[in-house]
Length: 409
Image (cartoon, rainbow, N blue to C red; front, top):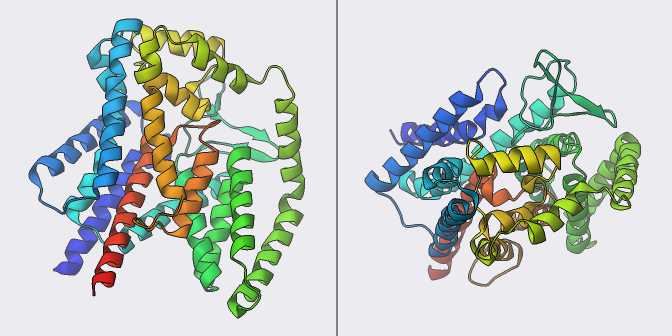
């Protein structure tokens, strides 16, 4: 009976996460259907919160989560007064922010942290396999952003530097799998975790994202250098493995990495670098009131005057996407208090604290998220990303409960 209940919990969380990921954006499922599924999932979350019994979560995490939800919704005031977007339209546009409440659902069902970790690894593995498989087929099976259409509306892909550029939701799950498996093989050489590491690394390279790729390589190198010990036989063995990986990486992807570096240098020296212009515009030119600096301009609804202005004038005509400038865009949307909340969470996850134990692989994961959060997406407003954060917060909390129990005994 207990095993059956455990399996139900695992199935529920897995399906829930995959649906929030929109099943990796499978192109046979219309966006409208996915929108209805999102509303249904939010309804399920509220049912759990109001009617199910469960443990109390970490108060600090709860405060940050509640603060992010409140500040996101508060920004709709600016959207109403300064951008002619009614409150209902703002609520609909920001509906996915309620997925943060899944944090409480995890406590209601009391899922085992080991089972939850396996679910996250499973999703990361599926993501990596799809990314690799997609490079060897002429058909785009999974797709969301950064695509092109032909005259008939069929989905095409772009090939740059020999890579099919197809953005597949789930990259952060691949990151989680990479650092988790890295930590495991650093402690003990294991073929299974080595395989997961290689697949995750391959998937991340196939994203063709310079920020992610160089961020990951930098963290892996520093992680290796700072923790290596010649007196430890296992670490010496790991040295040979690390050297082997580095040599293979240089042989296979050396030219590819050099091309990425060259591209970055060209873009940085170009006056037409769009991200720089977008940051300047949203920081200094697109705030109709001082209040907007405090609580933001709000989340635009595509069908409102505000949504039309952002989509048609700012994004389509000028190419100024707030989703491309991370926390700078978040400051414009949700205000400085919101950004302080987010930075505080990054600080909490990255730096060691006596009162809170955060596993090394999670700190490494959040370091990459942080260094890519200024010129990429604001991870705290993208539902399929912060759902992973929610699960990580739960894992950390359960780890600390075990440590406290051990210390008391």
